[in-house]
Image (cartoon, rainbow, N blue to C red):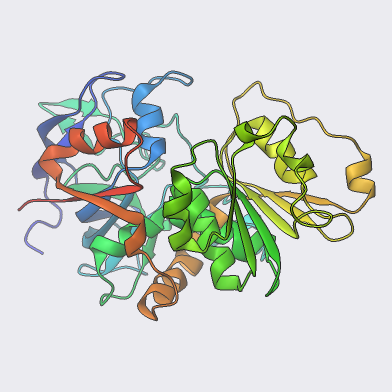
Length: 377
């Protein structure tokens, strides 16, 4: 491409400081260095993680910064040493990576790459410790190695999944974070058998993706647990057969008898430590498995009686649904292409990229699941 090796000027939504509206700016995007790829972003979505680090209430503030990590795009150019991708390839950026060389990448049981595992505090590229974004010479920091709130971005090759070019990027872009996290938590970690009973704690986008996984696995009963009763109607589209609001009961939800001994599988997607305890204690003894997906507060401690383990209840955790980004994500896209996985029902809003602050407002109000932003030429 004519732009290869040159600095590209483009529009990006810059977060200059915590909690302040993003500003559409012209930024300069440097060419990719060794093992890096410059990607033209066509569609990007807003995830709760973007809002969390934009608010910067509970972590190290890194500003000015270009947020964004759920997206779909096309490779514009590649840096030295990149052989798996070429200009024109369709890709999904991922907030965590797969170097394919470390012990984790070589293990069939792990997706927690030593080199490219998510790092929320690092605002620069891993190769040389510098940013590829700047405005009038001032560096603008990266976010989780992706920074997709920009028409062009530079990403390590290990954090890009090459996908079927026939897949519509305005749909499958949501598979690069939350939807795959929930889906994989059920299909790859909980692994419910056909006809089993599954409880999903938290019915946001990740929880509903976990519910979609239970539906795909053939669960006969899917119990949604959430403090907001309005979410039951939406959850029915994802296979929800029963709904429990903990506020409707004067005892812990795990003591509410609905299943003759407990559920076969549970998936916790709230990050609330009490919900985690409930999710674990509500599974059936002998074979029940609970999977934790939600990220707790730093100081939270998990407390349960050891007899729960001795009674053969199993507790597991998961990161990105145990999917290896480069190896497994293309297969998740194929699930959509084969009409096994329904992605459209997760997409509730769409706005032009220039109206990105509208997407933030929608999420802050708790409206909808995913808002897709289309980049404008």
